[in-house]
Image 1: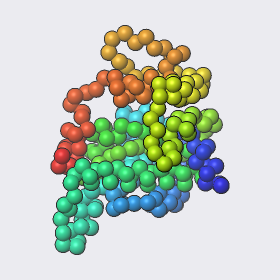
Image 2: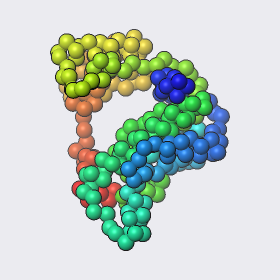
Image 3: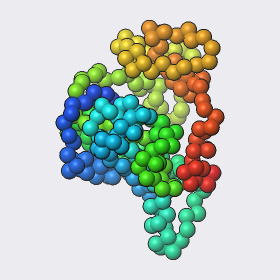
Image 4: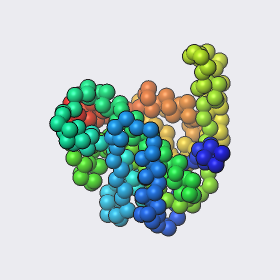
Length: 255
């Protein structure tokens, strides 16, 4: 029940004290992360406390300067292929399949780290978009076939934010077969997701409204989760030079 309580009360923390997180504690929560279910344990974790490096990373993730520890979770195909070679074989898996399994490994492991960290009173916040930040490879000396997937800040919380809403369970949990959403279901789910975040001023505080082409008729008084996720995946301005396929090829993936 303690584990369930920890998970159900997860919050992303964005303000931290200056207190250090001992390496021994970091190693303990990363070891807990390793106990996640796995396929090939295709992950590596970079822990960064160095002030100069953290300042470099802050150019791309503002949150990094607010926490004593930055962690970068990577899909590590390089190490897996060294294990395969040690047994006299070469990796023969289709690259897209390998990528899916690697991202799965990273996600399961990283979530275990979050749960372990929160169980001892630490706070965390995932930083998406690491895959698009090519400079991370230079900052952390990542060789080919080691792919940054997600960043995370870690530290002792200096805030107590509310638990944020999730899509209502009846629209996520399906017994025996999949049940498609009706228009009414979609409207109901969006009301639940939008109401608390708009009332809290969540996106206003973060100044996180995603820009779109043309006139933006949404204000922070109406900009909720539904609009945010719609823009993120459906209408956001994209740099054609930074497609995932191009970036992965530059990191040594044969796609």
